[in-house]
Image (cartoon, rainbow, N blue to C red; front, side, top):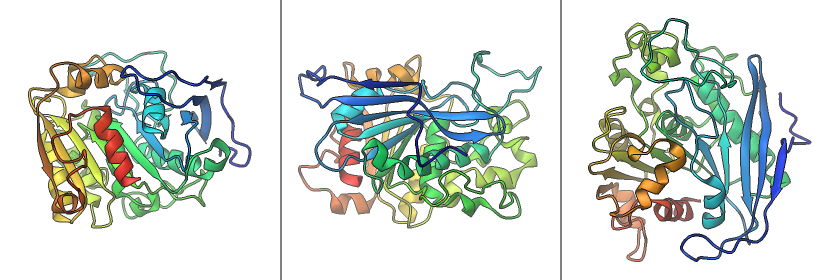
Length: 351
């Protein structure tokens, strides 16, 4: 288990000078970066995170980013410019590793995998166990790093959007215990006294219902579950955020491209519909003419697409709970262009 009393500040700590501002000329605070912090020790290897903390006035919330990659490839470095957004949003940001599903030899997958990626392997529920462990570790060490432990959001894209959403609707990781997964499998071994609850969720083109996927043997969802969906319906259901939505779920901000041919936009629509049915505060931005990763080459550059001209057109839907609580000056009214300002406004409102 990772040491919680004396947190490992990683292999590098960048004490940034006062920033002169961002590309819009707005002054932003300095940001301190802590890289390669070990937050959990697993049998298959250590799990790490990178943390950026702004030198801001007042309580500093935390945003935990969960990378995509079909649950089988990429690393926590596959993330937007979290240091920049830590400054702009005056919010600490962390990008976390989690165990990836192993790709067996002779398995035909429609993407290339970096053989140098040393991220530990595991099958579900290892991935959400790790994300929840990272949230608990960060909350337990909030005072040491200088952010507010009571205000934590999760943000993810694609497979990371799935895990961020699952982190939002599964309050305690032990809630997954039962006939399918034993208490031992979901036992919180990292900072067990801390809460893994998150106060809000941002999901970019995430999967919400694995039972709706083909789930054949060589698909990424089958690799995640340890077998085809049709042969593991209970595992698929427990891995689906839609199955865990209750009225107690935190606020959600969902963004998805209508032309996404990797994760169908219906996945976010189904999650939004279930959140709305349960009376949860949720907003859904459906981007017209946009596909997976917004058409960018990676999550590192995806935000650039949203801020380029012409700005993406979108269809906006919100639950009545949002409409009743949003005043005329709010940026979460459907007119706000998608991009950093939208997420910043959502975090301001929910954290």
